[in-house]
Length: 335
Image 1 (cartoon, rainbow, N blue to C red):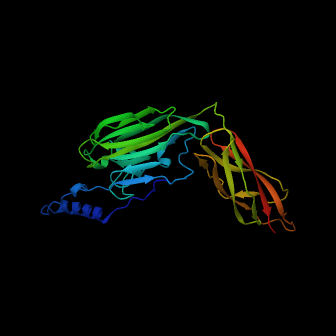
Image 2: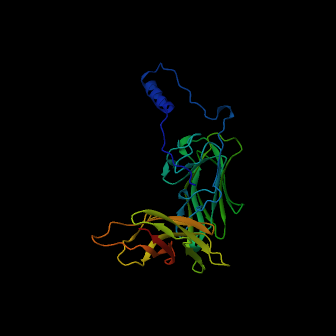
Image 3: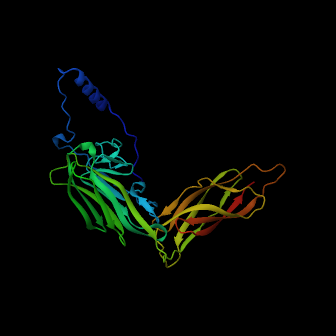
């Protein structure tokens, strides 16, 4: 489950503030409008998230440079409303952040957080990929000016691997570049610097995990359709694809695309995958995936379409590995 994306909104209070500012410039006698402190009275808006139990898709770290803001979180907490995806934290509501900005530089990808916050990610690479480095740019977002004071920390398998020390809105942006080889979990933490959480808007800008193919990986995935399907031509049907490890073997997370490899009935219309660009992925096996299919029509004039059992073969193309596994499905074509 991904953190939801929300379109930024302009509130009536913001419009009113802008109008008052404009009016103040033309009327020197107008009284000054005091800025409202959102943290007044010790206000707080804590937020937590945990991935649903049994969720098949957790991370899809393949042999590439993987941007973490494309990846679902395993778990997260935040001290001031929801963590914002690819935007600054903003205020306590979801979707009220702005473009991530550190030291005048904007970033399209990343997480807008607030002390205290925590995000957890798996570092298990798919299809035998080994994850080797974590990089990110960090700092207090420009939306709070020179205010705020935070400490960024990175934990690998529960052990502290990096700590930024105190950073404020006046601090220069810093770079994190960590070796994560052989590690299983990445945890990104932002703490307050001991003076409370006021204006502690902390950005993880362009966070990335680099993974590489392990040439010695012994991948023994097994793909099968344990049950056939019954449907007429032109009707949509759903087949269940099951992925397991071969007995006595653990291959690790899998990520693949499907294509139609072979169709056994000459003259029959081609099989249509209704989601041809879908990526199927799982971190734990066995896993099952619904595959939506259709036998296309119409037929040429005078041609009688075949009925009965037709066997078709699919190719599961493993990402970044250059090879595929096959799985056969029996389709009982109804009249």
